[in-house]
Length: 198
Image 1 (tube, rainbow, N blue to C red):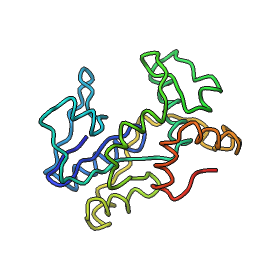
Image 2: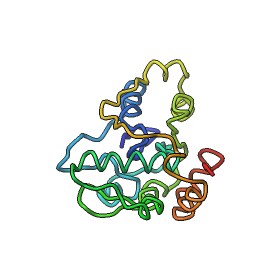
Image 3: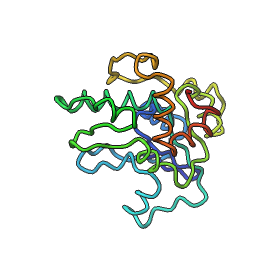
């Protein structure tokens, strides 16, 4: 999370957050970012979780910015990330994947819709989409596009290689089922993108 006098940026995992955080720090040096402390992981907090964690936290009057990504792309990124960082954790069984569920590093099963729920209330004012990141960030921070282009450098040293062709992973019917199993995500995606990938 990054907090400034007039906005809060929520770091939704696997939505280009590393590049976004670096750009926001350059564009708004007054903003305060959460420290990276793996013994106290707070930088992926949503508004509700931060409010529970810190009673003095006050988001009132601030624009809320949050990264977001299309569900199938996000899910595959997260599944492969969890498998890579957990060394030995198996990718989810097909039925779990098609429901938007996956194993986490602690050995539990997470659900995409539950994660989306962490960032959906209150609804962000701006969803920052990786495919349109420069324009989205310029609009959200009300800064010139040229400034965003100069600040936004791609820094994804932890990129994990896997097949990114959605047709390899999902049939059209499976994509419809995936969205049906994650109605909150589908609702956000329709608002953020104007359509679903079905």
